[in-house]
Length: 277
Image (cartoon, rainbow, N blue to C red):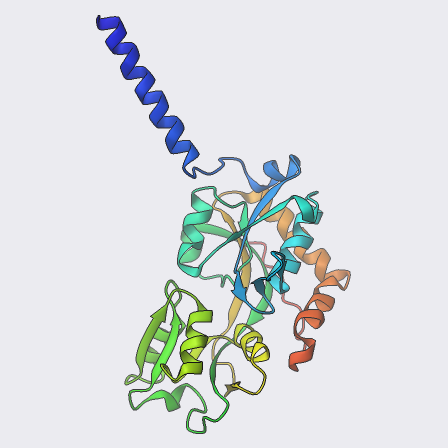
């Protein structure tokens, strides 16, 4: 009786463990180890035109996708063996820490606070915070002009709207949505007066709605986009840094930017210096 009871308990525990594993537990392997098996899971944005976009046919496009695909290739993984996973801003560290992705390339700014939780390769692009408004707007010309209870939108898990309030416009009303695409829809409908995030992100949205939206003012921060991966995975970080440098050196980096943003009038900047900290 006691043996049967113990066996039933053991079986129940095993079943529970199996269920937990099946419900989304991630891999404990490093990015390099998974790449050696010919497959990678990479986190990107699904709603950022020009950077990380899920297209109607199920494909993915954008500069972040181009960078991630190039890096994967250097690690020995073909494009068809990449699994793309959506990485909303507020979930990026969790996805990495839980092993649900091998790395993330999703307009992911390198900051000291984030480096406490994850490691970064790169940067592979340097952006700057800016403002997006409706094309008929004439009174918003930069962050200082957002006073007077104007409504400013950004996303949860990101900090640009609070930065504007802390440094430029204490009277601004902050609105948060889950994604920038929702912010842009709120801007189009008149629910908010401006959207703030990195200029290259806003440029992609403006290009998606010709004549309806415009960027105003000059960039007022420096945002270094990195590829985020599990903290302590120095081997993978070194190999990803090598891949980023190779993309810059062989011209693929510039070609990708021209492909994704050439029609928007973006002046292709000098490539960033890879930081091998």
